[in-house]
Length: 240
Image 1 (cartoon, rainbow, N blue to C red):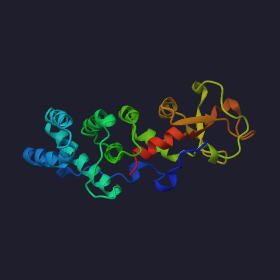
Image 2 (cartoon, rainbow, N blue to C red):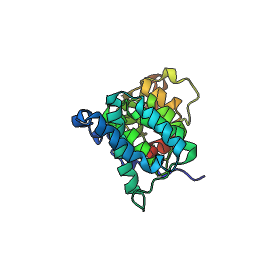
Image 3 (cartoon, rainbow, N blue to C red):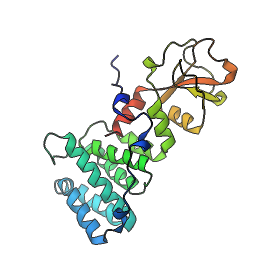
Image 4 (cartoon, rainbow, N blue to C red):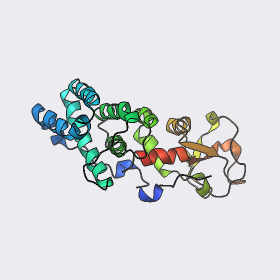
């Protein structure tokens, strides 16, 4: 079975927060007319070729408060720059009709997100939607429920084939019993199991496995937390 290419080598393993840039204060000090003019210019390649979709985007944008409009414009501007850098023909943007609804929702969600880590993820997701790569509508539904903690944990995890020798195989008992987790069988630093870990399992972005025999007692509540192929695909979608 073909596995998704692991992207960890190309990303900062300390988490998106270490590379994400804070939103500049001047984003919010632009005049309303400048913001509207910029947004219309940025979305013109999309809206001019799909009139109904264009009107839908404009109405959603008009319904935002000024701060949201400013942040939405800033996000789209950065996403387009990233998308253009990925395309062979600068300025050629592709919007799949299947993902138009998700694209608008991404703009709406990004207009409300001021955390640098999560905002960077929305930018990258929009850029991948514009180039029609690594994107799926389901990710737009999941990302609003993400916090920087989930992103940082997921970024730190190894895929299953890199966690080392294990003793007991996959776990068959409740995650409610976990107290700590490790990244691989050689990891001696116990990390506290928390709600973010449970969420990653719920999203199917991570899974768990028994540590190698004799390393930890089962009643210690220690598990190996590793990244799934779905988790790696999601990271690809929210990475530049």
